[in-house]
Image 1 (cartoon, rainbow, N blue to C red):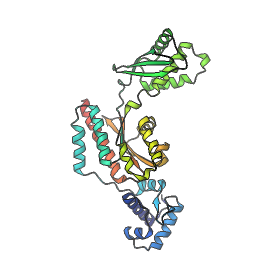
Image 2: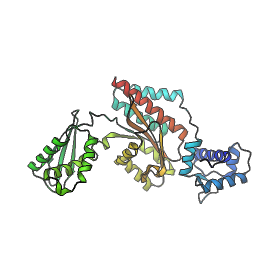
Image 3: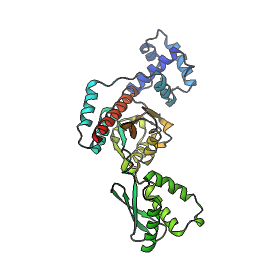
Image 4: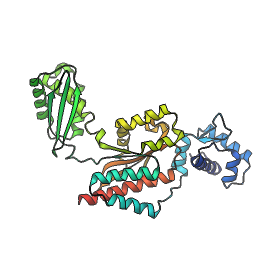
Length: 346
């Protein structure tokens, strides 16, 4: 914030660093001693009052000290943070572990494991987007008992996915064949993302203008394509690490957070918001727009194969995280993963 004086910036930076270090509200006397400024505690209290008016710090009811707000963390990250380069030992360990993997799947799992271990937080990685892997070739609907239908989805690469969906009524074998024929004739050869977009558009049409076979096919297939590549496309590690941080609230809040890791879809949407950008992106607290992450920060970075962004890497932890260490860790891991995957494709 351009309105902050140099003294206020130093005191805010000192407060954030101290609070990240020990998790306790920081008093004016401590700030006066540790900031390196020749100021009295009274002067520090005046500056803190100004920062509180700006919404950058807050004083908990039980303490005379102050802690940073999410807005305060944002100012710190954007303007005051000094990144700490990773040690050569850490970089070499990451390069060795990722580079020695025999295939892409192991590289992704290893990168996620290493991120979790080195950050002591949760880590995520989205699997590489591959046009052939995500291409749609054929769908088949097989009636089960009651209103359950088995959907067999075949990609252009030959991969087969099976899903059971629940329909509004039972369908005869001939109806299911008719619906599958319509769908295959209409959408074969398109990527899963293209099919998703087409289905969303079809669902907005007046149902009276849609033929019965078309309506059945679209209704059933939308259940499949809505999450056809979601749950399988996100690797999560180290969720239990988050239980070590009292900042993340009580067990009820923790349960909501763990449910987010289990369902994965909203986390994928969050990462999708970052995957068009280069470099590290940081969501602090409610910037994620996702309620279970309101007490968390998410540090993301894309990884590339060649010059193309194909996936995202992230660390999830409390807003009280050591950003100066986590940011380069996520950045370097993403770069090393991309390099290893590019070499694996040669």
